[in-house]
Amino acid sequence: MAAEISDSTFEAEVLKADTPVLVDFWAPWCGPCKQMLPIVDELTAEYDGKVKIVKLSVDDNPETSSKYGVMSIPTFIIFKGGEAVSTIIGAKSKEDMKAELDAVA
Image (cartoon, rainbow, N blue to C red):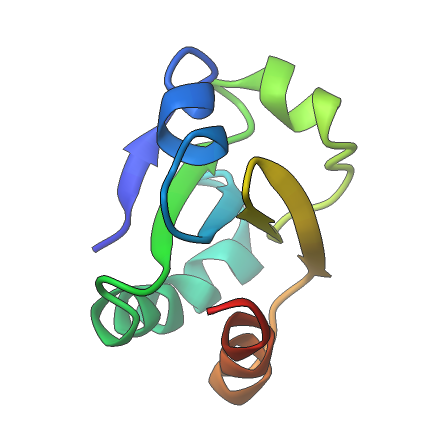
């Protein structure tokens, strides 16, 4: 299961991470976010040690969501070396998500 992060832990958990990080910007009331949950959990297990996968609630963490221009959810942003390198908006298939992760892993 992907770890929950917050505005206050974002820099340490994401920007200073040694591996690429996929940040799942989500909210508990978001239907497509719930639809993506099993895929995100599977990817978390499959990419363990290669890509760190974390979740950030947009309701509880407006600062980070705003900073990265998250307007609709789910939005997934992949960070590598402290920089956003890829953005995926909306519910996607596991294969689409894996293609994005494989490009940076």
